[in-house]
Length: 118
Image 1: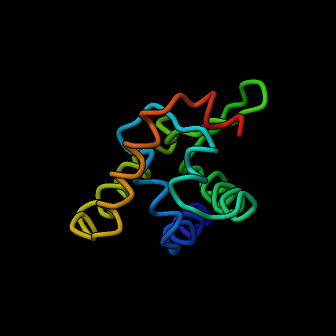
Image 2 (image 1 turned 90 degrees about the horizontal axis):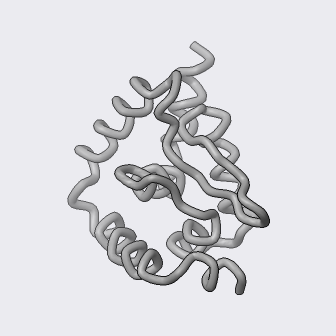
């Protein structure tokens, strides 16, 4: 029950869903790329990432000064996969998601080192 409640809490916020969809199909993203995509304050993005980590939907790794996030494909992947399939099918035509995808493509065309060092 605890795991279920954490996942539903994590999925109950638009920005956390946007983060999950951004990570879906990508190896990993740097926190600065997520901040740029969401156009939110770093502290706000950090709070969202913490909730997603607590729900075990994402994992992080630190590399120097930067932290990279990816979907959790380890123990809880069936749960993550099912949740992402449902979310993707439910909001695939949402204009906000299309805008996020376009924005993230532009962000990923830049080198993360130059972007994250700003």
